[in-house]
Image 1 (spheres, rainbow, N blue to C red):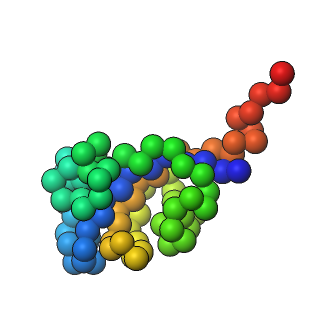
Image 2: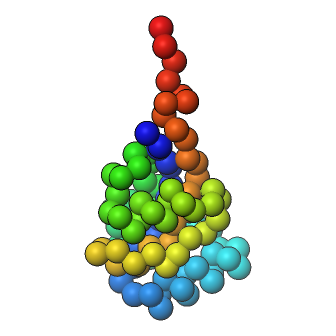
Image 3: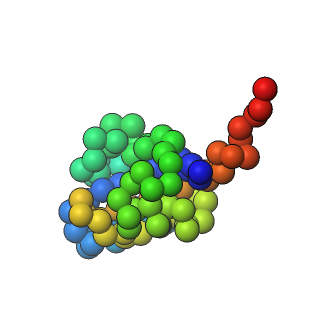
Length: 101
């Protein structure tokens, strides 16, 4: 099963999401923007979602993460919760990580 680590920013509108994306692309710090603007509880940790399995997140978010490019800013991604900016930090296949004893 694939696993990923990612961080995100959740806001209520596509317009806000696009403005924040422009700010980040111009050099603003992702974690600072997440702390200041994200409506998700993960905002307190700079948007960090930690590690999660493929299929664990809502469909649109899951697709964006597991089909996205590592390190590239993805979004806006619309879900039932609002609009997300996502930065995928890593993707791994857990079957490759397992060691047999």
